[in-house]
Length: 231
Image 1 (cartoon, rainbow, N blue to C red):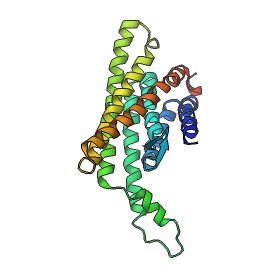
Image 2: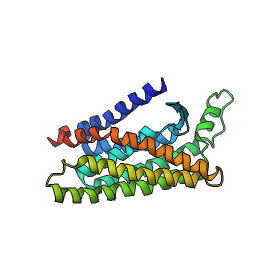
Image 3: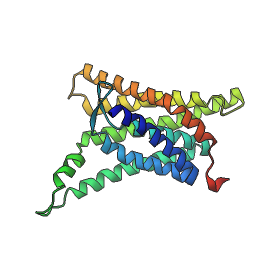
């Protein structure tokens, strides 16, 4: 059942990128990045079993962020992609601040959700710092390296669309290694043994690479889709 939900989520979330670009163009893609940046920090706390392996949720939403940033870069340029990354980072910080402020209130005697909220929103500073750091560096690489390949492939092929799959897949795979390695090391060194940390990084990267291959057709569709206001 979990596997079917995961597959359905992939098509739902990646399809939402196409829909948001069609309806709202650049603004829609930035909105997707901000939404995914907030939700991934909640979803990642949930551990599920997928294909016989325990996995922290959030893998699909992480790829949604990477793909949305690349669509911005491809369709609207590096400046727009950086804006999306910066607003995603601001969304993550805002979410952490707001949820911590909520937990400062004294609950009423009739309250019945406080303990559940505390379980979700009581985030260790180390985990939050690791998440923000990994996001910043991996997404900055995502923007700059994608643009570098964009320039190289445009010059050689004469067509930006011909090697779109290369820009999308290679950039995502390397950026995911940066993201997973930074987060896992910053969050878990001194808590887990080295071999456990390495296994976590490898498993997370393998899943991310599979999703990077799956999102390539969506990248081609996003490249062709024009916002209604831009037609």
